[in-house]
Length: 586
Image (cartoon, rainbow, N blue to C red):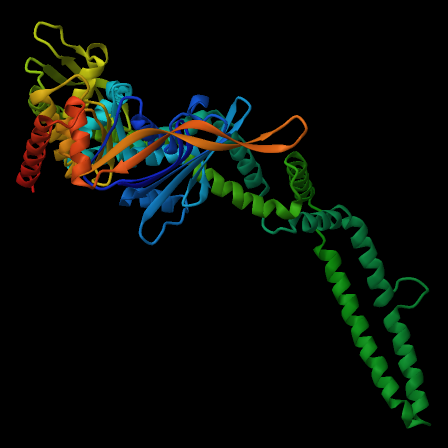
């Protein structure tokens, strides 16, 4: 609900503050006094367009501020955008305009925080709805007509819409995933072939240890020099243990040395430890000789084994060069491609699974769309009947209205297109609402539609009507007044009117007037001196007609332009009648 509006330097308004109440608020005044300017300000502070003519002459700065008592949907959206809310849950929207030559720049704030216009547009439809002969274009839009039908269907349709949305988004996710898999199928096949080749090559190598190449290289060196190693080992054995030439073997020399030590012991027992050490050396020499002899016999000179070693070393080096991998990483690489192969070999099965899942999801989406279509058609029949009743009460006795639900492409909203078909007069061909209704008919259509939706929308939303009662009088004006009041029991209603029947029904009556004031202007003379001059300016003022006498005077002007005794008696009867109607609805 809009509770307060502050306007500075906007059109004919220099500085104005307007307080609004809940229920039905009417604005009256002479034609051209600026009633619609107030509604324009509300429109503009919530994202409407501005042009240079709306900026007050001789000013470069416009400021509009609107205070709303808000609802849960708005609060949730503000929390989502991390905008602080006041403790009383009031939200203050402000918009400033700055004129730079012919260019206009503006900025929005919510509770003092700078925000983008996109957020303002999101919040706007949750806070206000303006209906006027020049602002009913949203009603002729098929998308808006579908939204209205869904709203009329209430929770039954809204719940099914949520299911359609869920199923649609699920299908989109699965299609995207499946398409991505199919797009990369060629790359997948190339990669799979590469991995299979690598796996085959590594399997042929038969890796055991990460340092295997180094071990194989050492083993190859030993096998390739086995003959030389055997010859050398035999020479060492002969020198240590069994010499066949003039040079005695090491063990023979040690025996001679031991005999000499024994002779020394005959005269000096202190060499005994040395003899023990010598005997220990002799035992070690014998062991070395026996071991080197066995080593020589163990040396393998099998050419086939040597060839196998050479081939394995070649394969390992070739693989490392081919795939730019170090020999120590071969084991880890083998494990990695084994895991990748397991995953990729399940790739086709994954695509097959996705295709089945997508098929099931599409079926679920179609089922939910069909159910939504059925609910919409059911709601359309009820809306047709109700709206025709409302339109007939607005002096459109021969009206024909059809809410057509026809097939369309599937989207997050289902697969229905909704169109309003309308014929206001007997004998006229029924056509799309956008091609048929005049401005006045659209205004009455909008009011009738609102009457159908009285309990379907958020009660804190403000409904704004700008002279929708133009060109009607008598009984029709009374019906419009009653419908506006009925709407105001569930919404705040702001209405610009020239109809005394409508104005009498209001809870709050605001009178808009134009005045001429002497405004002080500061001018700079040719000699650079500054002077102050008074200049007549037209400004807009608003009075809240709380005083019953003032209100009667204004209603009298609306009826006949004067406050004669007959007019006052009529006004008295209007107020009594309005009070009686309001009391009957409580």
